[in-house]
Image (cartoon, rainbow, N blue to C red; front, side, top):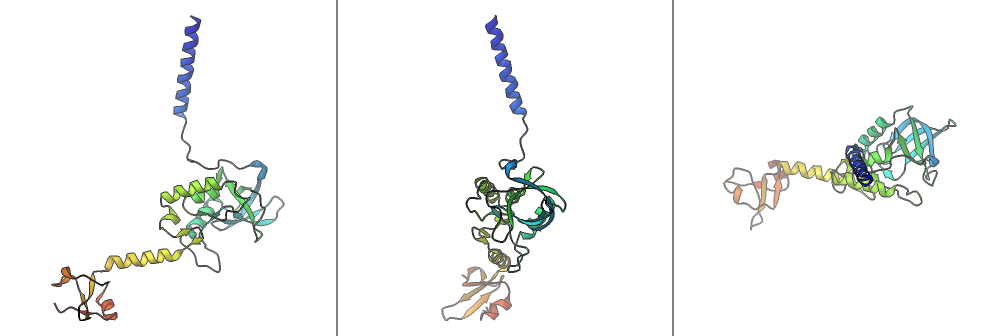
Length: 248
């Protein structure tokens, strides 16, 4: 009898444990850093957001300091030597929404205190969220400026970046825009130009055996049979490059 009672108790315990596991709610975050290291954390107040990855804060002693988010880079919006880059305004808006003026936040140090410009280097936290990794998750930042010994969370950041990249979020929408050297806006310009031309190119430019440059418009008798050397969006464009309209 004692044996059977123990067996029944064991089965009941296993069943209740299984149910508890099944009912456990899924967390919103698939992976990421859940909380700061309290031994390296300081509570500060947001003064203003400079751009997507830089803010001004008031320290406990009242001093105002710039804080640069560690291990990430967002497109430029305020650099006087660069134009506003695509997804820069979106990154700035995202950070401003998370960190309104007067917010009480936590900045978490790694090893180095500041960069060469005197900006404090930190992982920035508010309401249990690390802003650095949220920017990566939204495709508004890339992993960058990875220098030892400030690499505590780099592996997690790289995993989050890969997820955003696979989903083609934000800066990852266009291949080649976000690189390990920064952001190349010329890639977006080329794609836009190519796309625009592709939508209107229906005039065929052909060079015959005599070297005559002739263009054919849709609906012309020879249009379907012509193998174009060039394509044009308008007759004016064709004429400007030395082509004349086919007689038929």
